[in-house]
Image (cartoon, one colour):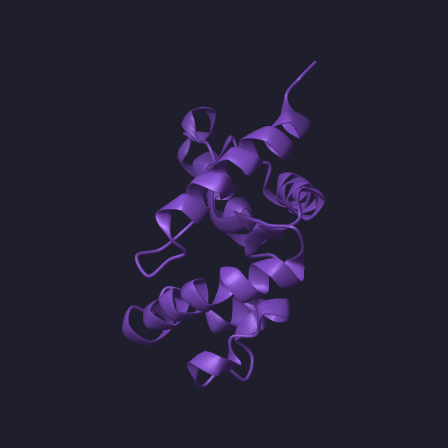
Length: 144
């Protein structure tokens, strides 16, 4: 993401529009009790969704996405590799650490979170996740 943010900001400098630019970051995410919990309940849905986009609507640049190395089928999307530098997942502490890493790398003006896809998890589980994100993750970023 750092590469793309730097490229975008450099174009703003080149064309004299940098004062009107903002990097906004959209990430898939899920708050659970642990990474293992997230991998079990949420990851199968996201893996299938990301596989669709990988195969049908190429939107990733392989040489800029290390997690794509060796991916030839959906099962090759490994949670442990895919989540790094891509997802905001795990316990509240894991999510906070991921957000801080994105802040350091790209300094986004806004973070936009997507918590589920059409296949799931279910609506009630999503609501629990959103509430937990609001209670246990967002407060870590409020200015005091």
